[in-house]
Amino acid sequence: MPRRLRADAAPSLVGASKAPCMPSPHAARRSISVTHRLLDRELDATMQQAFVRRSTRQRFAHLSLRKQMDLYGSSSGFEFAVAERCRITELCTAGGLVYGLSESGLCVAFSLATGQRVCTLNLNHTEVVRSLFHNKANGTLITVSVFASDLYACLRCRASTLANLRAGVTDQSVALFESESLRYPGFVEFDDVNGKVLTLSAEAREYKVWSMAEPNTMLYRFSGEATPGDGGGGGCDGVSEIKVSPGIMLLVGQSPAEEDTALTLRIVSMESGETLRRVRQPIRRGKAIEVIEQFGSRLLLKQHGGPLLIIDMLTSSVTKMRQEYFRRPCSLIYLYEHDAFLAFRENSASVWSFKGELLREFDDHTLCIPHPDIDHASVMYITPAQDVLISLCEDSATDGTEARAAKHPRRTTELSRAAADDKPAVSIHVSSLFDGRCIARLDAKRVGEQPDTTSICYAEEVGAIITGNEHGRIEIWDA
Image (cartoon, rainbow, N blue to C red; front, side, top):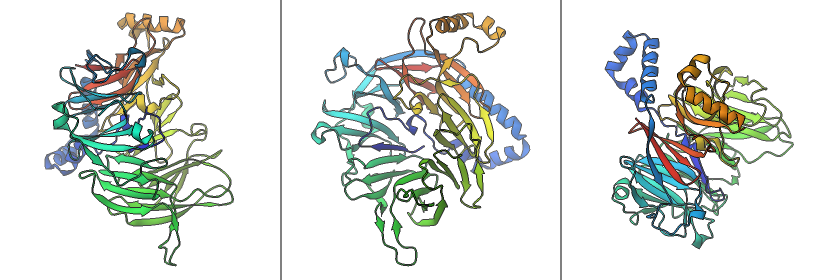
């Protein structure tokens, strides 16, 4: 899922960050390898799926708490009083390091192998880091920050090589997008799927697309302001929103007036910026648009009081989703590996097809949002292969069977005690995106303590789950 950062956003920003969506390397190998093609032909597909499930379950079967790190330790590089401890809002892994970002803007790198502090990424005490992005295309870590000299109102981006960060060198970073005014309503958005960066310059009201392999190389631009047409469809209706999808961008025209009955849309090639199609999408007059997303060839649209519509842009067919589930706006994530989407409503998550069918719900899965201002994406993570959902969940003392209680008496007693104290027992659930089953469960709750996990990440290279907590500390759960 692309990650967008606006200049007026709060320091605790998450995106899809926490739930990165990139093409599966395993799927790519399957499509080109003769060996895998023969296996696909000779073996039953259900056997392959069963093997994948068993392998995934084994990957998370024996995780336990191995290391603990503290962002606010004595060697942070700056003077941070204990009273200034803030929760971890973002975690990122790259180059054998884990990077923790706190709500106060402090960003520190630790070694994944040893847990030792390596460096503090803040250049000085006036820098507030807002977000991090691992640029796999060129082996760098991009930090998005605001500074006191700009009255903390303008985003500044810089890239540091992973080799320098491993060596503890932070003063050799390269500034990015210096030509852009990233003040509100300007923004920068990182799209790992397409390998692009999208920026909006606030002053020029101009969108630009940059290469992720060479972030200072602009590929193309287009104006966000309305321009007159030439009679041949060459005009621009202005842009109020952009949605990024694999291979394409959806440009939503300027907000319609109350009397308008159609929304102006443009589908643009992500590689060249060429307009592929213009659409006048009918809408209900006077009803605010609550959800608009482009997932491949499908447009998802919801207006206030109306159902969620799935519109196939190739066939113009329309599917109405179940009104009782999608009555309120909810967050949606495109699962392109499954040709489906993940929907979040309050504390629940479910997977839906583009035919409007509920494909699966998740066993014993009630999302725990520790703070009302934390987005759900902060406490959940989708693996790059889109096979596993890792999330912070509330446990119920009534869930499970007597057999489970007999097998885990200590856990059952803890759940019952939490229920009696009206405190949610919380654990990290590892759930299969293929069937919704809970593969593994990690206790993130100590007896007598309030749940304090505020951020979750997964280190694919070492198979470790990483959590950040309320007090600025990081924990690594490894086999």
